[in-house]
Amino acid sequence: MCTQKPPHCCSDELYKRYGLVLRTYLTDSALPEIKKKQHEYMLEEFSYRWKNHQLMVKWMKNFFGYLVRTGVL
Image (tube, rainbow, N blue to C red; front, side):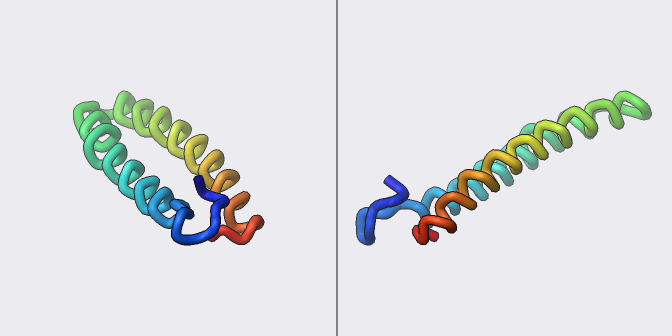
């Protein structure tokens, strides 16, 4: 799907959707949960969400890095 030649290549659309999903998750899920908490509980929630975010970004970096290396992006 992503390694096909244009016009069948969907890598640009995938990249845009990844950004949209990431923004939506952060604004609709993570931020409200962090704002609900107070004091050290807020920091614990932030730390939990930050670790999840770092893991997701790491895997997406690897995935999109592969697409860049293969010349698709």
